Length: 113
Image (cartoon, rainbow, N blue to C red; front, side):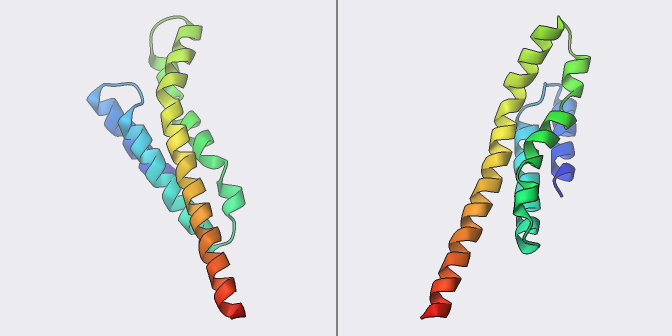
């Protein structure tokens, strides 16, 4: 669930001819959201939380290998291009976690009443 939208976003960015950008950010966010929602149902959100940033890093590592310039320059460009996608994906997981906690808390209060 996490990798499908992320890979699709990476392909879109590659077809457009840009380094990882909006396609990766949207794909990573959608994938993280789907994975987090599935993890909430299985009560395993803690194991999914660190995966979006790692998945974005791995999927977009090809940008470092195929770009031109010194390795340091390529790594800096890659980090600047990919960080927003990592942050957006992690924010999606946090939103799902907060919503699940709020709903769980509300259900417990209602059961006590």
